[in-house]
Length: 66
Image 1: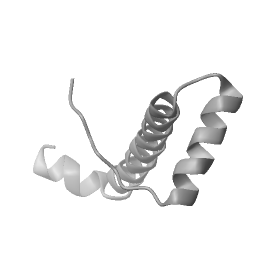
Image 2: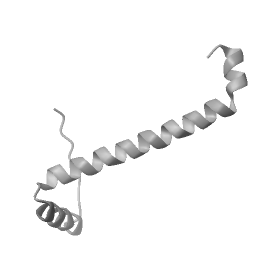
Image 3: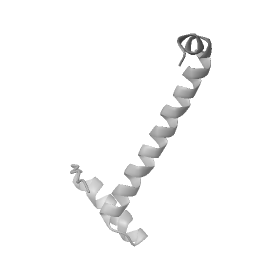
Image 4: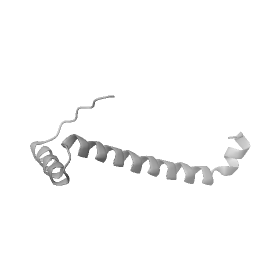
């Protein structure tokens, strides 16, 4: 397992602690969930953009054998 250290302001840390308490989880669990959700959104956004580019340039990609 890899570790990542992030710097939060006092207000951000307090907000994260409040959220975690309200959800019955640790701040680390909430932060990990947020990172995973962000990665999913970005992966989907990039995949959609790649699909649009592939569709737009399909004739060129076909000629290149891609």
